[in-house]
Image 1 (cartoon, each protein chain N blue to C red):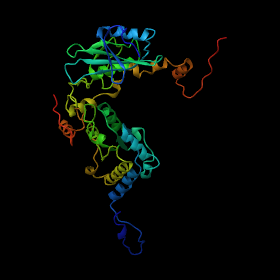
Image 2: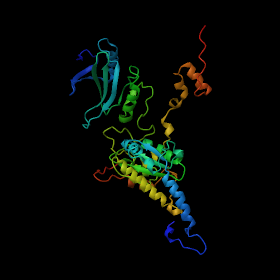
Image 3: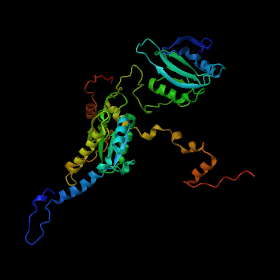
Length: 206
Length: 204
């Protein structure tokens, strides 16, 4: 599709034709369709969900970006939006919701708590949902403004439009849980769960 | 103001900063005292607002179990405290027999502090999942981030079956159906949805 301006006249034929790789054409058609009609699965657990609702409502209205229909069933959803902190008790729940979503699927981690655990650096809270499910877009903020979430959604559109149906490298498939029931190695989880910023390091008793 | 002097089993009485009366009771006489407070005319503390516990930073001080009582009729409040030595067994009698609402309150105290309530009908964890093995989070000896590494916490959390948090009793519709009126229960049994049944035959 990049050659629109380079149409060449072939003798005796109409100049209205395009040259493109078939793969590009398919990628463009499929990925544009996917990106422009994402069905979000809202997983709202805290104050981020209020901003999420504001984003969905008429003033900001993410239906403008193809999210007209919110899928409250994971089996009909494309993008899981985790809006709010995730306690360990909900970890198997969000994992099961993610597993129930059909491919292709994407995840937006909305807000500081969903992305890193935020201020809740304690015994009860998952330190970033990327230890549970793969995340495509992190939206920072506490909570993010609706504009922030919309920007995250647009970034996800951009990412989807850059994917390829033919090149396995550019589309990361979901990794199932390993034999320990983890998505990442224990070392990785410990590393990304480390406190940062002003958090004081605490020595564990075991 | 409630005169706390006649409360049986009272060890001492304090006035809290907000003006409420706190009565300290010996653990072995707790049930007797609370029964008296609930049933005696002129006391009638018919509403149990909350049950909670306190552990102080001073390790010498005993743990306290606090009962917030209210009399809806008399519009009076009273706090009852029981002191438990941390070195001894942390157990008090359950007051579920007096106030049904104590059920989940006592489960929460058990979950967070590890205080056992003797005679409780169903003493399980309520906030943390039932297989939670790191201890009792609100105890001062509990590290803020928990005892296990983050990876181990994630592993244990992911290996919990969400349905395992519910007992069969809680999952059972049959139990809930027991409280329904007869005609509705009959419709449930027949699997009808949205059909208004024939009115039941009136007794001739």
